[in-house]
Length: 320
Image (spheres, rainbow, N blue to C red):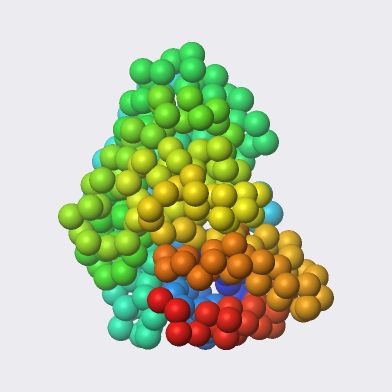
């Protein structure tokens, strides 16, 4: 998960001197923060340091990254007039520092680099709510009460995500992940009717680039089959759904997951046992990307993370 570095002391030291968007606007700082967990943990891939709101910030939307909170928008989306604030993304201009960071990283890494973007619904939820939310009440009310406006909002955001992801691939990332972090707040019917089409458009718009496409959401156990229909090559399963059950819902494609991040605060024997349960649920089938079920918690001991990586490598040595 993309937050792998935030428990590292070297990351915290850097962030004491630089704001989030300072890092994103500097290719050198972005590259350094992306490399930190690879150096420390020995993981099999790097995740580009960024955020799903980076394209929104790049086109001039007023968003602040508040420590301990997340992205907060000065002017939440409320009406059709707000669509005018979402101009098309010109990646080579608007995301120039991000793309330069990708070019730097692909020359320095000896593991694949994964890029990412936000799925249209999750980006819409941030915009409509003005920031993180517990119930996404405003977002769902807009979706159900003004479906045409909501679809146009999702279409604008899908264009942003697709343009960002295509540019990342063209700059050198080896795989991409579409984060629909808050889709789990939806009823399956609402997801199918209002959200699935635009997520499928983003993922389908990458099909010609021949890179693996990962699709991930939180608390999406009831949506996994629908998320698989959106067209990704890999579907993430968070820790609330047993991996084998989630895989059965996803069908014939790869899965990612799904150790509970909180487990990493337990003594090592318990961590190892929980990791083994995930591997047992995968049953040795090819196509399992071992990962946490969501992001690394900030107070996680980096030594435990490194030990987990070694443990999984030992348990799966020789497997595809």
